Image (cartoon, rainbow, N blue to C red):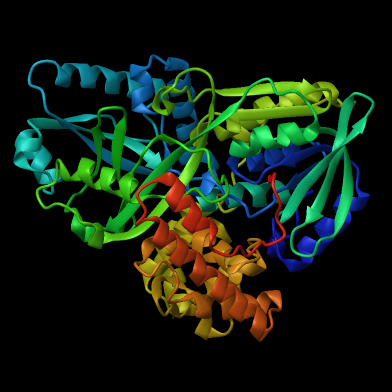
Length: 574
């Protein structure tokens, strides 16, 4: 049930109203709760099996954990030490699929240097682990490990102190813009017939006798409510899993524990290096990850028992990251070097350990009641496997024969034709009057959907850079609202584009320009534009304030003080 070429997987204003009408009238085999990567992946898995599926999300696609990760598709070296071989093998197989077949426009290889510090045992120990890592994942998508002397490692990463290493090993993994990837998975699901609707909160579950038979939802934007009957409901709410489980009236088979991970973003010129860096810490590992003109440094791993919607980074979190990375840098970083900060919550399975860093990243699927499936845990990298398992678990409640999963053969929107377009960058650039590096930037964000983006720029003024965020073009703000389901300014600045973490002003300086561009698509009045700008600027101020607080409680209190663009949300939220 694919759309026509001009509107494939489109999530615009018209499609949003059509989706509401369909939710109230159509019959569905599955309702998926949660618009993170697992929920989006589950909707895609179900739709491509021929099932009738609806996906509802209370906020925005990837508004929670799935926009706040380390942005890596990786097996997880530390899981080898924890002897979780099956998890590493599974994750590396998924990395291979993403880079080579499913999302080559979004998922790219990235190199890391592992500095060696011990002369006797570390090189053979690490080399053996990396050899196993390479062999488990296959070597087609990324190069294998390379051993370096101290001099060779310092040539690759001159930012390191000479005393910080005696040599190094370079290896490769892959990375992606997590929020854009999740949104593209959801759009692909819509392309194959799924009804995808954000700002649509589950407020109750429907029951027939002892089984769950659907959900009742509220439009967060205008307060309308309706019921969605379905053969089964899949709870993909991540850290909100337990809250949704309680709302359903069913006894959960597992509990989810939220672990806060904080990352900081600094300019690329602050750490002279041709490679990312991975460092061992006392409890885990720390990554210094290349990110366009920046480095992402993270992460922390601590319990979080406060507001699930808005986890806050604290002064302590930031100081920890600076202390860890400065222990190996010749020129230390300071708080003044930080351009962006973000905090996310991992939905870990509770009960295995008191330390969140030791909790398994395996996922669990349960059927707590007939007609209801819950899935939690896991890694971003293995979302596709998790999605397939969730649909399989729900199949027992469906009266139709459920076909096998085929998402390992389904490229995401923008993947088809991407490689040919890369070879045609110069011609495309000349045709649209843009520098080739601009076209490469667009291709790596939209793939072959670049034609849709550029088609909106009949007014060439839209091909100008956003004034205070020149890495992005004005047309991208328009496209976020017209095709990608962005309903609020935060959706565009924090997730469709990553302005909120890539510029010291965190998006505040370009908020009005972007709001006016979006408002032209969404029909905002002058007052609505002003409100969107005010809400966003207040959010930035609250986050900055939180980052100067000494602990989670104080930071959470400051972050909660900011207004929410989606004021209609009530707890629990999907």
